[in-house]
Image (cartoon, rainbow, N blue to C red):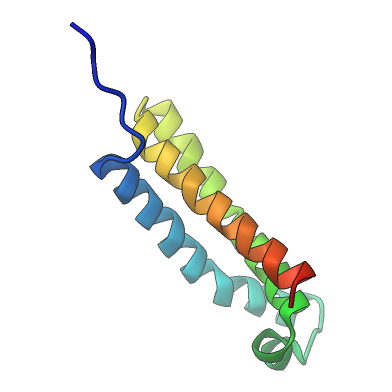
Length: 102
């Protein structure tokens, strides 16, 4: 019997949500790290007004998604991992738009 392959399922949506939430939680952490360790005092103002700084912080905030992807691959839950990849691709598109078109 053939199994139906779907592009989007509930597991994809859960993985996508985890990826987006992880990125949103990592943005203030990355900004704080840039503020403390690089001495970048104006990072909070730049994060609000400059798209290139927003793109830099968003691209760094996507890195924790690799941890989730690795965990889901180890547990052989490939649908959740696919959702994480979809969230990372959405972040990639957002970074490209912020960096080159704004």
